[in-house]
Length: 163
Image 1 (spheres, rainbow, N blue to C red):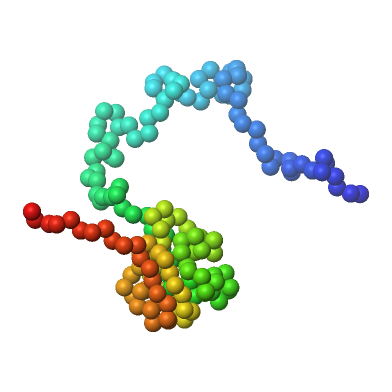
Image 2: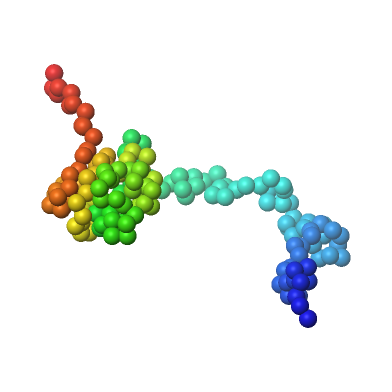
């Protein structure tokens, strides 16, 4: 005997129907439908998460900490070790300039609407030229030691201070 798709069904008891409340006293969930007697929670449209009866709620009593800088730049962080693995796997062409687009296509630069920041974690042996938005000193040294170079965008000229 073969099984057909239209014969497939769950085992008995695998899916339990929902309780239909307010359907007569004999059902065991009639009249108040399991909500008890009167009060705010017996009514419809109740949303009182975190409400403490007029007392200042816990989430408002506790001191707030930290700071979220809305001007912070969003960089995709890429380590030199990751780049070397891509070169070894032939996902990056060492002859071309490695930029945000190339790293994104290779699958390491996720996010980073303000570009890529290169960090020095891992070994780099391939000679590569990078065009990235930022790089740590260690990363620049490691790339230059391997024979490549890092192009960073020109920093805006600083305004004259203390006038």
